[in-house]
Picture 1 (cartoon, rainbow, N blue to C red):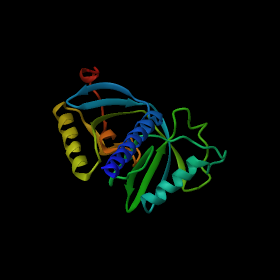
Picture 2 (picture 1 turned 120 degrees about the vertical axis):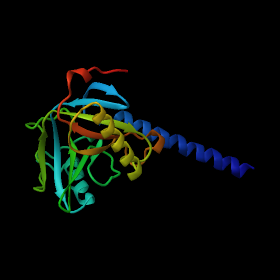
Picture 3 (picture 1 turned 180 degrees about the horizontal axis):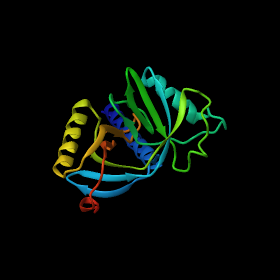
Picture 4 (picture 1 turned 90 degrees about the horizontal axis):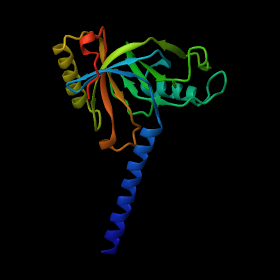
Length: 214
């Protein structure tokens, strides 16, 4: 019985460390700031300020991620380390990475970006030393999001995307562009602690829905 008890205690300790790691990362990673304008039917309407991101286009997500990670690690004109923020933003296939990543498709290539911390402006963000990495300023935007947990499988993403668009259509809210997958946790966070969202940009938000509700 002693070996079984030892095994159970060891497994319990590893589970506690796993949960502790997920909580630590969630509480220490800066998130892109936003203002909540409304909540309804499991949907949250948000307003984001102007943000700055480092962006690259590459043949695959690994190459794109590596370029941007090197930029944050000091591959810039000041040799400065830049903190990561959240969420991971994905258009197209899901990627399980740690930080402020935004990806999209340009023909067969991958377009990926890391959002920079809010302390940086277009004038103060360090210049990339790799010519394939560029700084992009994203203007203020209004979006609608729907949150879900566990792993962001294709089935879950498709289901939440359909529900988000259905609720927005029922409210008469017009969308702009394709929905995006937001992931807020690193790959080692327990699935029951993970936060994911489907986000889509809105053309306009009538005054009648600009009232956050509990």
